[in-house]
Image (cartoon, rainbow, N blue to C red; front, top):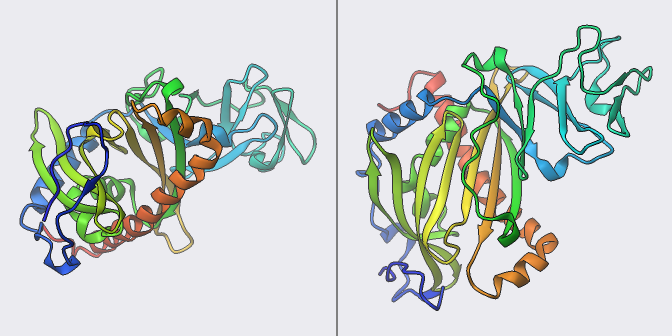
Length: 333
């Protein structure tokens, strides 16, 4: 039996009336229509990205060392300049091709560890910088040759809670699939209670929007222990071709967001695509006790990352399976 729907009341927890065996849940396969999910995915892929790709967590970009990555087959290096801002460019040294992801950062200058060539983020001997952006939670890089779209000055960052009243954590993982498979997974909320029974129960999709307002409005309860759950109402949207955002609209944590970003990396040795999933969880609450959670953020963030990682262990399997079927021409619909 389901719990009452969230209304942001005094008590965030609810007690389910009775436990329901996994196999006795209400089936959702009729509602999870392949054409509906494919339509939402197609519209998401048509939205502009400005050629911006998420590199990783802003916290991972330390003042004394760079971040090396491959995005859409392009080797990229990013680091913090003397002013704390992000610099980025090709990941190969213009001298003899050393991997700049293993270089050193000294006083905001990237110093190659092979021969000491120093880069301050400006053009040098054919080495041309890439536009980069730090939104406070994530670091982005703009690759115009890869994106092929009209470039924008900044990425379109989803609306987030006030940083002074929230806690942010970022989880990253890699799967053998393409960005569209990651996005398609997130545009299928119906799998939540069946595929993640350890986390979700009583999931009902209330509204699927449409071409004018693409969204999925969902009532779901987060499982805590036994019959104790936290019911919320959440909205899923896809503001760009590689991003899906879930916002809690009602219930505990109202205003919290989960951003899922899919960044293409390139192919592995067998020619299979590899995609990085970078998920930013920005949690907030109007309850006085949340101030304690913010004070203990260094301890809370690993727990938030672990929860995201547990879900993505399964969801990457979903995305990889989808790619396998598509690549073999056997995907349903």
